[in-house]
Length: 408
Ligand SMILES: *[C@@H]1O[C@H](CO)[C@@H](O)[C@H](O)[C@H]1NC(C)=O
Ligand SMILES: *[C@@H]1O[C@H](CO)[C@@H](O)[C@H](O)[C@H]1NC(C)=O
Ligand SMILES: *[C@@H]1O[C@H](CO)[C@@H](O)[C@H](O)[C@H]1NC(C)=O
Ligand SMILES: *[C@@H]1O[C@H](CO)[C@@H](O)[C@H](O)[C@H]1NC(C)=O
Ligand SMILES: *[C@@H]1O[C@H](CO)[C@@H](O)[C@H](O)[C@H]1NC(C)=O
Ligand SMILES: *[C@@H]1O[C@H](CO)[C@@H](O)[C@H](O)[C@H]1NC(C)=O
Ligand SMILES: *[C@@H]1O[C@H](CO)[C@@H](O)[C@H](O)[C@H]1NC(C)=O
Ligand SMILES: *[C@@H]1O[C@H](CO)[C@@H](O)[C@H](O)[C@H]1NC(C)=O
Image (cartoon, rainbow, N blue to C red):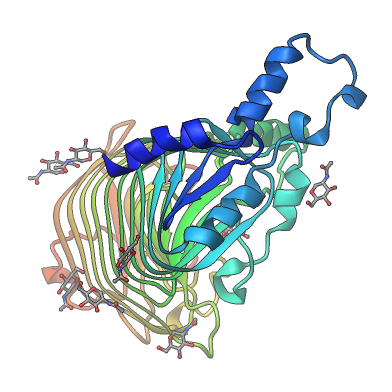
């Protein structure tokens, strides 16, 4: 109520050229394309311009990045930031890593530019361990970001798909939203519409809740990122009420990429997740490293046509040194996991022979191959496998791939 009256007020007093208005500790942001100045300009200049020289860069390709960052720097500590309705054009990476006690309310669409894909592709450092930039990195303490079902994060998928088509097996780079060194973070009620190259992940964070999110990506070549991935050194992460279309779904990992640096992940819950036409449903991926992954629950996961629903590997990507990994995986539960697998494998689990998985628990697992027949449950190096609740049908070699291309 308070913020909506503020909103009305700011509309009246908004100076024509400003898109961020600060009232006390609240910043109210209007997209550049929706400022009175821009609207006035459009109505005066109703005839579409003929050549590019007629457009100022600001009109032609507005970039809201700097005003978004300005709102975060003015109100990102002990403040509130309100993004009003309309489309925010984002043409640059954003790093808002030092927030404190901030409430972010988003009513509009964030649209990541697609006319400079090489820019986004160049931002392809491994942010996870190098601490480099991602499309948007959010960190700090006591952060809530709510979208009320109105916020839309749009990755401009079609341009990526066209680019991928033109270049065959394009090695596209995911544009990421990263929760990085975040403590007490809530992300709620946001929809994503995006390229196949999207990825939302949590790293070096504690007490993170992500709920009521809908992620719809497009996939043309089967190469897809995860809806949500929990990466290294994160704990107390709760992810619930998520719908993922055409991407991965819930992944813990990859973790342990640096053999001399342990990675610790614990107390993670994924609950009430729907995955349609996905590469995965409920996975744990580690490198042959050190540290642990423990106390993780995948619960109430429902899916259709998933390449490989349940998977654990101790040697992701290289498929080397699988059995010497010392990264311990223990106390992991899969409960009420139902749906169809694309091929005849429901479960592929290869734990390290030198550090077997401990206390894996399965209940309510009902996974059927979409084309009929019996589903295989492949497992190796699971301690007390017989009492895990999973009827393993055969061993799972270290080389068992994360994506299958047919029945095995
Ligand atoms: C958090 O910020 C609000 C202003 O948005 C302020 O009223 C409140 O006192 C702050 N809380 C703490 C614990 O500093
Ligand atoms: C793409 O973005 C980069 C970095 O901002 C910039 O240097 C380059 O000029 C842009 N290219 C185009 C075609 O806009
Ligand atoms: C996004 O994250 C993935 C892996 O988590 C990484 O491979 C990719 O380089 C990242 N992309 C960007 C733009 O940071
Ligand atoms: C995480 O949340 C718990 C429970 O609310 C709280 O006790 C703990 O201090 C939080 N952790 C951090 C690092 O703030
Ligand atoms: C599960 O999530 C869906 C949205 O994905 C939501 O509509 C539904 O209410 C949730 N169910 C429960 C029990 O929270
Ligand atoms: C994880 O945290 C521990 C300390 O708690 C630290 O020693 C280790 O380097 C961190 N790992 C990574 C990958 O940052
Ligand atoms: C396991 O994780 C859940 C969810 O975060 C938490 O409630 C529970 O206390 C944890 N259990 C242990 C033994 O740490
Ligand atoms: C299993 O999960 C689905 C959602 O994925 C839910 O609708 C159903 O009620 C759950 N069943 C049980 C027995 O909890």
